[in-house]
Image (tube, rainbow, N blue to C red; front, side):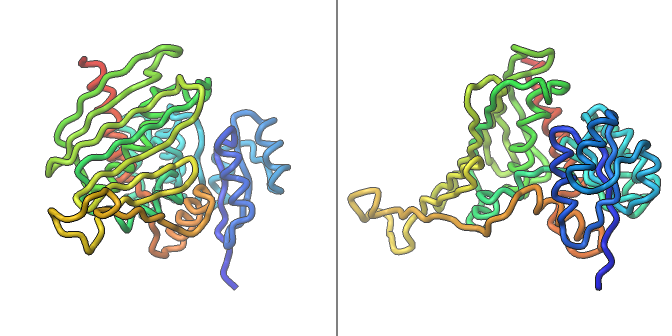
Length: 318
């Protein structure tokens, strides 16, 4: 029988409670306990998932091999370092940290401790993304739109770090690009002290261009990505978890055909069903066990944060 990995959750508010819920039932995992700055919240969530509420972070770290951290972004660097320096693997909710200096410290600490550091870029596990990935081939233009109703939660950071960073990470993953060549952006702070909406135009090596919009000022939620490439274009509805590919027919020859249907065919792209957060946590546990994993690494999380901060700087420069 495989020994269960002892894990904990630090921060069990709006997001962390779902981490605890999945970890309490994930195969090969023993949810040792949860911690929250609000003891009442910790006690309530612990009762819901059948574990213990731990009163101190260091006490919890002494009981586990891995932790999922879902505290406010301003505490990511501090709490993540406390865990890694004690030899505890970390899954950090996005963004990896509040600054590149903190992100670099986390990546360095993970390397020094030879511990796993993953980042919760959950859209990587979205069914639409998983379905589309095999069909993505040298994208020329990527368009992403992510809008949501206003909520006080998340306004401790800009909409770029709160929402857009999901699509910035997807952009880097879909193109396989470690860097960008140009970033231009506009945005506005409307209901909070940070940006509440932003649009970025991003150029990547090789000429690929992306237009990415994020807003937390809408009445309805939209999470959509379109990918244009030489073989056709893909449409991803991240909210519904569906994807389709309007693909040039293999039998088509340039100069033939009289209608669009003669030239292209629409294919529904499929991937196995699965809760994105549960898949993300399972990949983290696989990595902690030393098994090959498709989890988003700290280095990848650092790259997404770097790009997000560049978008914020570009807005300020306009």
